[in-house]
Image (cartoon, each protein chain N blue to C red):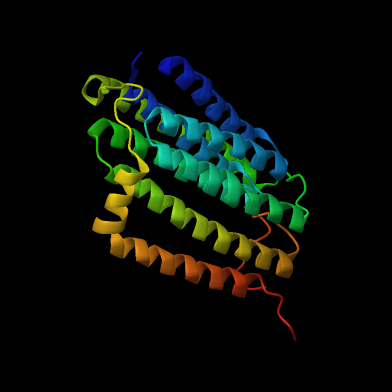
Length: 165
Length: 101
């Protein structure tokens, strides 16, 4: 069951990511990124991260991707053109990514025995466990991130504001 | 039925590499920004996999902080993209190669 779900949603992740790479229109790339993020939420559930699965759907495939699609529609972004610069990127990008993935896959698969395996429901982190660490041991970093969010809001407003002169 | 942790890590490596390739190949600045988000998600998956392996909550805390920082980064980055589009009327990174207008 776990293996079947892993392969279904892992395959969906890879298919969505490849679609992001191959589509030339930004709105298609954004929609395929939503597929990737939603299937990652299911994989988080399989690994017992309940809160993160919910946060992934709400924050990533909800808030962040709405922001992306909003900007794509606001700027009326069309199909991207092939330019001279992209030839060097094609020559470097595909082999580099292939080398990276084969190297990492070799390392992970050769250490597969030491890494062990995941069982469905063997280790479930409840929101209570997470909040115990987050609000007690890591209270200061948590508050610092709230300041970071505040600065980000101010920065976004200041940058996107129309200059009046 | 058991799934080896290494499968999750290989999936994370595949997603990260696709993100790297998209970052290098794409010419639209918004799509390049989206491939950065894809790379962040891939790393988050390996964090969760290791948190499951070591039975540690801190791996998931890291993912939580990465999500918060990614949200802040997306807001500021998209505001910068809007500002770039206002001044240059293009989203093609090959045409945005000078700091000065």
